[in-house]
Structure formats: structure tokens, C-alpha cells
Length: 390
Image 1 (cartoon, rainbow, N blue to C red):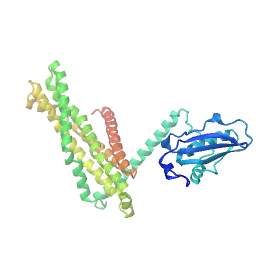
Image 2 (image 1 turned 120 degrees about the horizontal axis):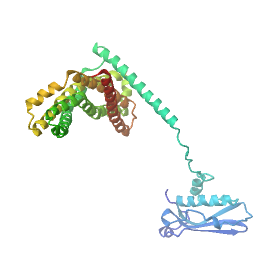
Image 3 (image 1 turned 135 degrees about the vertical axis):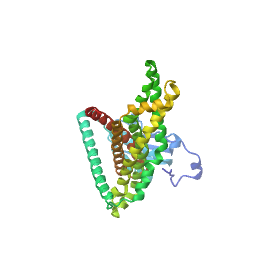
Image 4 (image 1 turned 90 degrees about the horizontal axis):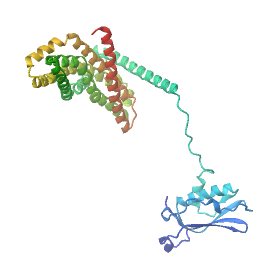
């Protein structure tokens, strides 16, 4: 707050701040609060009125304020007067501020009559049944929204295959490039290292039993059945899914989604279908590529570490160990992972807020939900495979 000075103050007085002081006196049976000096926050002003200075029995019903020697002031004076008002109120007096500058009166009128009670903190322990019920309802609502989005995507995809869906081919090709060729390097590195690590751990253990050749079985079955599909899906959830959510959230913030709806352009055919179809096309191919890279990683480590294993022997053992149904199982999983990642990412992007911070939040949520969803679906597939005898 800007400081003010009475009209009677001289320029010399303004340059030399006076010490803020207050006294309480009784003048003709009327208590008077005398305020003098410069009441600015830089002058170490008293911010509270001492309760012990107020007489117990006073004939008057008001406490007058003498501001004839008041210099500069700011909100610290208002704070002091408010505390004086509370003390006077407890003594049965009304603080009379009519002699104070108009600015002080205006600010004082904005203050409440009594101190505000601190916010009440709910000490009750939250009901776990209510929390679990709210979480269940929220989960059901999210699953319902995702199901509705999936049905809408399937309907528009069917129309797009017949040439009536309104999806532009260049949007699909752009999404396919982003989801596939642009991700080859990271998919190669991760799957190669996974295969190499498996081969290293297997070699260390199987050498003890002179079963070196079974390193190829370990790497082949583990990567083809589980790890290549899961690791590729996690990569796509973190890379492509997060990018989808961030892009759609940015469009929300720029009101591009609203513009599409105003012009009658379906959001599903413009955004959802290219994103989901591109993942459905590229994820199985990346899975197969990841299998090759992981087996190659195991090959390099096994041939390099184990003197009894030759390159031809490792490849022959891998072909004998990995059945075709293992490839089919991983292939189907990769398609399901792709559908889940695409729908979840687009759904999170569409329900994001319109601020810049919401873009980051949407991208983070898409990555987290996508990774958790991949692992959850993989556990479900494991149970189904055990039941089907795969």
C-alpha cells in the first residue's frame, strides 16, 4: 500500500521519520488513544494493542483516537487499529476512528467486526468403504468411457475401410511413420539389451550344470512369449502414447477440438482412428522386429561367453525351442496392447484441461496408465494362456 501523509506535514518531517508511538489517556472521562509518528512497516511499528493497558471501568461508551500527530502511515496502522478495536470491544467500548484520515477509515471498514475463526479441520477418519466405493465408481466410469471410445473408433474404422469414414490417408501415414520407423532405434536397443541380459544371466547359471546350449531356449521363449511384446508396448506407451496425449491436450488448449466440432468434422475420424490404427499396424511389426533383436542380443552374448556354443548351434536350438504358437501368442498380445495404448492416450488427451500445465499432466498420465495397463493385460494373458495350455 502506498504511504500517505497529512497535508500539514512539512517536507522536512517527511524526510526524517518519527518513531511510531501510542498512549492511552482519559480526557474528561473519555478514553483517548493517542497515535503519533510515522506508522510504516519500515519503522518497526507495534502491530498489536496491549490488552493490559485498558482500564476496567470507564464511564464512556467509546474509545476516541487522537491522530493530530500522525505522520506517514500504511497498512500496519490499520492492523494496529484493528487489534485496538478488538480489545476495546471486549471492554464494552466502540473504537471511534472519525478523526483518522479517510484512507484509514476506508481500509478499516473492510475488516470484519470479529476475528475470523481458523478453518475447521475435519478430524474424522475417512470411511474406507466410501473411498473404495468412490474409486470403484470412478473406475467403472473410466472403463465405460473407454468402451464407448473404442466402439466409436471401431465404427469409424469400418466406415474408413469402405471409403466413407472421412479419415485422411496422409494423417494415417504420418501416424504410422511416428509409431513405427521413428521408433526403430529405441526398440532395437532395448530388445537387444534384454536378450543380452537374459543370455548373460542364463549362461552364468546353466554353465554350472553343463547346459550351456539351453541359453538359446531361455532367451527365445522368454522374449518371443513375453518380454519383446511387453517391452515394445512399454516403449510405445512412453513414447507414442505420451505424444498422442500431449498433442490432443495441446489442441484442447488451442481450442482446435472446438473448431473441429463447430465445422462438423468428427474428432474420431480426424484424431482417434489414425492414432489407433497406426498403433495396431505397427505394434505387431515392432514386436516381431523386437524378437529378432532380442534373439540376436542373446546370440552375441552366448557365442562370445560360452566356448561350447557355435553360432549355427545357437540358431538351430532357438528354432527348435520356440514353437509357432508362441509367436502367435505374442502377436495377439501386441495388437491388444496397441488398442489399449491408443484408446487410453486419446481419452486422456481429450479430457485434459486447457492450460499449458494440463498438457504435461495429460502426457504423464498417459504414460503411467499405459504402462500399468500393459502389465495388467500381460498378467491377464498369462492366466488365459495357462488355462488354454499355451
